[in-house]
Image (cartoon, rainbow, N blue to C red; front, side):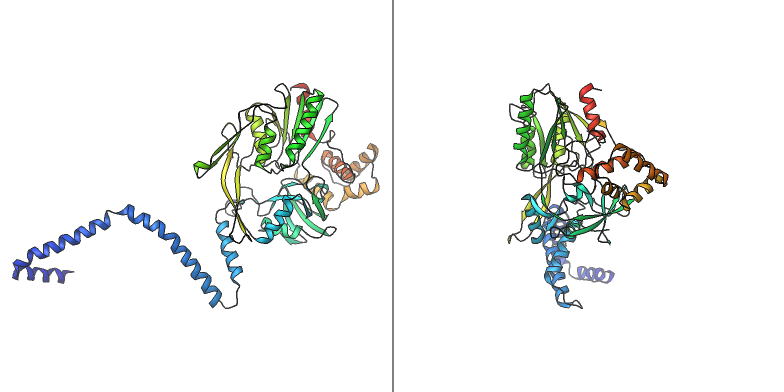
Length: 481
């Protein structure tokens, strides 16, 4: 650089007449530099537009290189699926995923209301091994489907799929679990359940053709209407309307709406059902990244359930999505008291976007829904007004309960006494305690009744002996306390 400056100096001294030319050249260069420096907006925009194209070209190069030069032959389909699944995994959103043709076919079987399997809804929490906040690297049970093998076996909302056929399910995706649980009707599959982080036991499930129910109902003591909504499907609203019309004709003034272990369903279905409880006003609103897609869903004028009807809504950890929309609307607008446990917390909206060949699709989170008070409950859930939980187990009780489940002690007892008397149940409970399997007898008696009911062709709709949440709701409706 110093040499160049000396040369310029000599030239200027010898040829002063060329000075003007050099000044002009220097000025032009400075002007060009200024244009480059003071045009960051234009450069940034071009960079943003070009970056995606660069990434696509790099991805294409990586695919080509692996397919042609990797030490072992590798199929393009395998590379494509690995790349696209990794891309979706980077979002840390369990509801956004790539769906291949095989998965789409299974979804079609499910939404049409009949498929072969064990009858269970599952989900997957995002798991960060560095900061897990209590989340485990296993697929979680959202809820068992009522009257199916999973439900009859006592699998609960919040349980984890710990292993399948002695194969650890750690790190499995929901598709991995679904693939292993489905099979020919009549065949068996052994699933290891992890409950409350330290209770581990096996259940053997016989696969069945699953018929998905929607509604169950009854009248309690000729005074309280009980409506259990199992799932929000295209057929649910009609059945709910039929029940509510019968409820109205009877002149009843007390109503329980039970959405425990209800995994959700169709938005239109839940909005139509909410219409029967409200005359106008907001039911739910949805918000998207593209604001022009935002929408507010309002109840139509006129309703079936009168304003003077006292309502209790029952929720638990398995109440998700559409069931939370109905619960949130009834709670926010002061139409019901919510009883039970904090709900699942799914406040996001997904959309299916098929690929051009329709052999695959993207399930994409595109928005979130909000209750009438403007609350989004995603990953938080709805808090009940009255909290009802099962009794907490000590460490010793946990070990005892695990042993009882693993050894199928309750199943063996019901095999011996299909319709046990109270004395026989008392004797069984006492025998367990004498063996050192001390546990709150509520759990043992509950398991006995669950096992007994699971063998009935028509099990009772309600359990007024051991269902503490339902018992509390009945008490509240009768006394107001």
